[in-house]
Length: 138
Image (cartoon, rainbow, N blue to C red; front, side, top):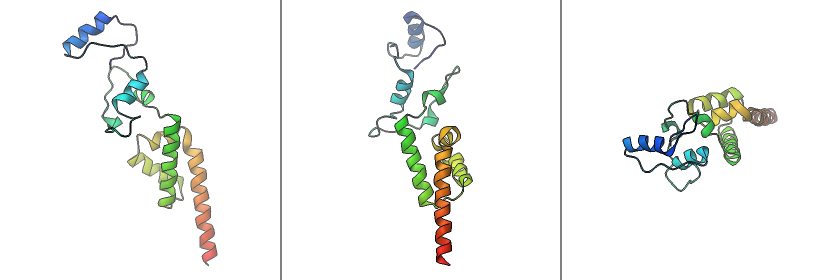
């Protein structure tokens, strides 16, 4: 997919695609949808291409084009909650460190942009429950 900051004629685009031995160019109606289509992001039954392997040129902002949908956001939050529960995470720093090192392209942006509050509340609840169980064991 080629994107340009201004309008281009069919002939201008065709001259580029011919040099690349590419198919006849077609106008893309939804750039975000096309990128998601290329990576099979909305088709879990198909091979899932790694978002990190997508290369953008000339200022295209992949982070904007690959922004998670609402349903994906909730799915990722559920994954993080399960991770917190399964690994007995009791400090937000531990989740952030894990996300930064292991889940930089999906969990980490969510935590930085809009999901830290719910995850911090969940972790605090896990910590208090764990501390309460320790007191009851004494």
